[in-house]
Amino acid sequence: MFLVPDPVVRFFHRMASPPHFYAFTERLMPWLVVIFLLLTAAGLYGGLYLAPADYQQGDSYRIIYIHVPSAWMSLFIYVVMAIAGAIGLVWRIKLAEIVAISSAPIGASFTFIALFTGSLWGKPMWGTWWVWDARLTSELILLFLYMGVIGLYGAIDDKRVASKAVAILALVGVVNIPIIHYSVEWWNTLHQGPTVTKMDKPSIHVSMLIPLLLMALSFNVYYLIALIQRVRIELLQRERSSQWVKNKVLEVKQ
Amino acid sequence: MMKPARKQRLILIILMILGAGTATGFALKSFNENLMYFFSTTDVVEGKAPKDTLFRLGGMVIKGSVERPGDGMMVRFKLTDFSKEVSVEYTGILPDLFREGQGIVAHGKLNQQDVFIAEEVLAKHDENYMPPEVKGSLKNQPMPGKGE
Image (cartoon, rainbow over all chains, first blue to last red; front, side, top):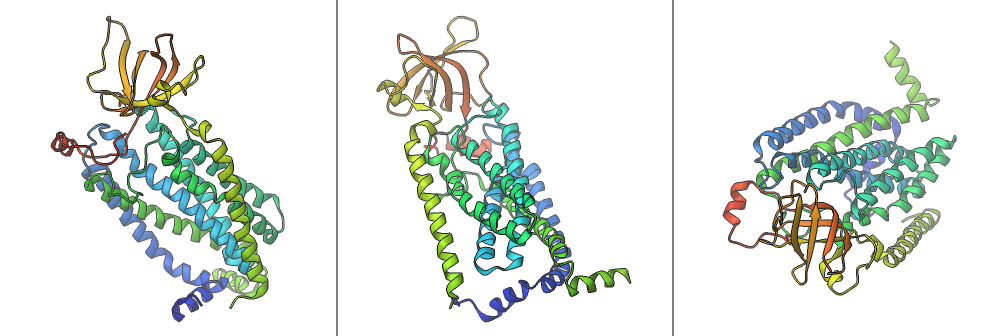
């Protein structure tokens, strides 16, 4: 199917089975935490210490090492959530449904961090905490979409039904993603245009770019860690009457 | 091969996204004017900006145009979008990034002499980040990127 090598297909089939996923992620977690710590340490050291001050903004620009990766993650996690939701709708894979709903609070947090740090930077640089331009407004709508997903899921008791409703909401909201990304190009905005994510060469000096990319990687690994932990808990809750969970509990008790 | 039921669900989802996308596309197209955060100086010179109400004007502060007549807080400067120019007057504290050659967005209205009387001035940061030494060596060359 789709020219994917056989071992990869088999890996995903196994991962879709809750007990396998549970066991595999247990072994994976320490490695992820180590990678996350190394990347964060390198990114922060590079960004806050090694990277030079900006020619115009001085040291205040350093907030981009949190702001920009958070904003990227807010979009990326939304896309992951929508795709996982779609897989859940079409193939009825329980794990995909759980990945979708477990992504929502993480994405919402990153969206909040992006908005909050942007606001902190905006006051001294632009001269205002907030403006209703296309970029800021569409990012705020993203936060509301995440909160809508979380609220809708909580409002429906049958979690399999809730997952379907949430997936449809998430998929409709996908139209907001290109709007956020292109808002600074389609319309006049106070927010500046893209620095890194454009076809052209990035308009940021390489000494500032490398820590930024390290932070972006570190945020991705953090997402993976937070996602796996949430998925594991949700799996145990949903599968609480199945044999493998009972065995797990007995193992822990002994 | 996909089972027919799954295929049907997949097609439904794709249609739903296309539908939502098209509807949003039309909505954005019809509200295009309202989504613009500011008018350009060309809009103002061509009379496209509102006459008696407050609006936002964006552009680059022309080098050498900033003057402070009198010893108060009043600043006078010219904005350009590299085609038409508009004079702006503002009384108050300017943001950190306000300087000649920098993009700004001002909120205010035009007076009888077509001078823009600003009540608020916001600096628009561009997308360039570099250390001061690099900026120094670029001084006599055009800025990288669009440099709005």
